[in-house]
Amino acid sequence: MDHTTAILAKHHRSPAFAETMVATHAGRFNHEFWQFWQDHIHPILPESPCLLDLGTGPGLALQAWAERYPQARLLGVDVMTYMLDKARQILTAVPQVELLHTDLHTPHLPLESNTVDAAQAVVVLHEMVQPIRLLQAAYHHLKPGGRLLIVDWVRAPIRLYFEPETVDQILNPDTAPQVLNDAFTHFFEHNRYSVDDLLWLLELVGFEILAFQSYTQHRFVRIAAAKPR
Image (cartoon, rainbow, N blue to C red; front, side, top):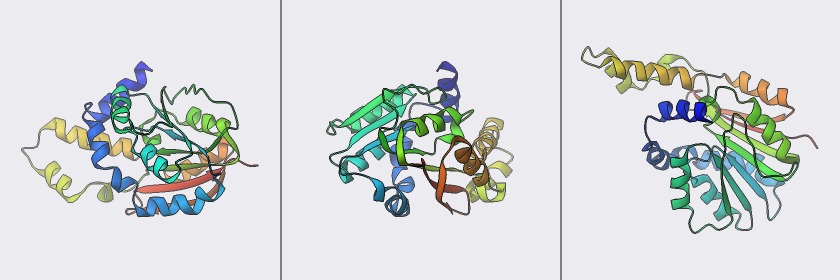
């Protein structure tokens, strides 16, 4: 766990990243996200589903689920204590939420096999050294026919990754070396997998691919997968 928290602390820069995740939540969970969810995840959910958010961060996805599925059992998992602290603040009025502290590189969840209706990992896999144990845990805990939703950065040309203001910054001779290093380090981290890599990893673990959708100039992908019945 210490190795994972060190990696994420470097990636996040500081505990204030929890506030950044709150501020940018609407961009990740926008209309297109919920339409994809409605098309590929919602149809198989019972009236009182069990939903698992892997890498929940500040927990706003759990809050959104609670509004849509008030009878649901909701579980959010994260390894960073400052993320879980923020989630507890946000979710004080959502009693059906369970927040779990575990390392998704080696997840140990207090769940039986075949008990989760749907799980998701939203902008999580690119932060991991390896995602296999997370995917295997999701497969283990999902019911037959259960759904997994993956949303993440995917490999794209550097000309598409860098915003115009970043290009101006890296060309500026007064830009500090650390700022340059940080820009390129994040490029490497966010370009870890291609779409095909993620599809292959999901199939390797046993999932069936239902649909995938690239967006934002092919820098991101949404993938819906199912555990076979």
